[in-house]
Image 1 (tube, rainbow, N blue to C red):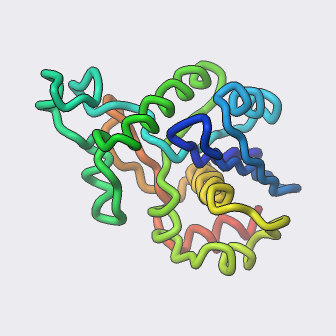
Image 2 (cartoon, rainbow, N blue to C red):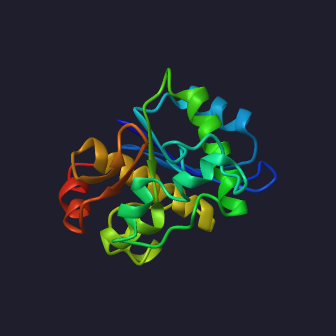
Length: 196
């Protein structure tokens, strides 16, 4: 199976980390534009793509502006409220998060008809897996080159996608609003990657 992890930047001018993970190879890329990301996914045809970005709005919201009537529905989705038990997340109404959310939604909408997409949160995945990132990851994977922080976050997203397919995950949020997937616990890594 093949998995793509994406550490999406809020703006196209900033680097987006990409990781392509399968049984034979681990590959990193840094891309900038939505078109490049879509083209890469079409090229690799992953079984699943895990994106580090909000992919939906809070239920009842039409935007994330504070002066809109929809502001009464709040700054967080149920998924963000639940993930705060495990790690820290920012309100979707913060300026940078607004840009990231709308870019994530746009990308999801372009891909969801042809590809399986999940939302994840690599910092929380790292915590759930008990990883000190590169040192611990190198115990289970051969990591090529000198990946950037964004590329390593994309790797955590791809690993979360793999664990999701193995059934070793926690689902946070509500299906009608948006789901965040994180790994279940540290044991997931050892048990699932033995067969990788």
